[in-house]
Amino acid sequence: DSGVTQTPKHLITATGQRVTLRCSPRSGDLSVYWYQQSLDQGLQFLIQYYNGEERAKGNILERFSAQQFPDLHSELNLSSLELGDSALYFCASSVRGFSNQPQHFGDGTRLSIL
Amino acid sequence: AQKITQTQPGMFVQEKEAVTLDCTYDTSDPSYGLFWYKQPSSGEMIFLIYQGSYDQQNATEGRYSLNFQKARKSANLVISASQLGDSAMYFCAMREGPDSGAGSYQLTFGKGTKLSVIP
Image 1 (spheres, chains in turn yellow, cyan):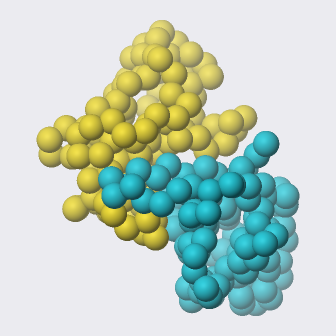
Image 2: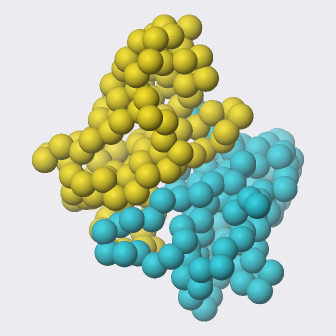
């Protein structure tokens, strides 16, 4: 158990819809990262938050947005969903200031667009 | 150019034998870190081992060791005494630059190697 909690585990929805993925980081971790894993693109970094503020952006579509709340949990919002958004979405968290410490991943949310 | 290259899409190893999974990386940053993660068929990502660019010795964690050759920009994972439970996808990942203090280090992943352990 990594200590990172993601809900829901599975999500099935239709094109054009909007969904919210939730992540609770490990106790004490201030940084939250979102990654997307798809068959064609592999594992890609989407966005990072640190203590409520956006810190880094990767290959995140404009239809996607995220935020980190005062209690440090984070949500990834995906809107106007397309078939190509079907993927496994991971949240990871890490300890501030220790670059040799790994990012700990949640079990992921598997999103299927029908 | 790809930053992380894993040239072996799939590997087979006999149970109890050792296996090496290849990873080469590309960066011009003098400070970086290399990570290996395991992803079983159930989907979760499990951290295995870390090597920093300034580390003098190769990292080891139990049956996992990292063969770090800085000049060749390679960071191969060695799994000793393979077990059936080692069958999984293995990903090499890199963090570039020092930790800014805000934990700002996104990981760049390779495409992975699927390891199958044969009884």
